[in-house]
Length: 112
Image (cartoon, rainbow, N blue to C red; front, top):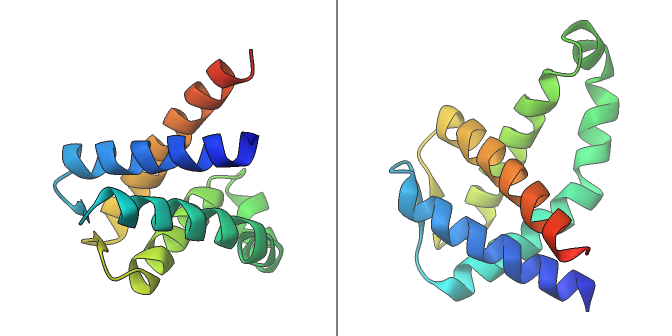
């Protein structure tokens, strides 16, 4: 049940951010649900591999390279989902930052 609530909250945040940011677009709410699910799947399967492969760069930049990995994951979701579009790396970076902050706030509110 908690996973479904988190996916729905993420889908809502994706939809809101797509309305706010001009470089990000989502066709419909169902597309944002698919984006949230694929994003969760990629964060579980692909992100640990990327973190391991880029460990030296992450250590040298004191963890800031993880922002680049998050943006790459967003761009990968853009490539995989037809109704979701991100106009470039910098939009993906901003989108991932705002998505992470929003998820942190919402998830902490739902835990209580």
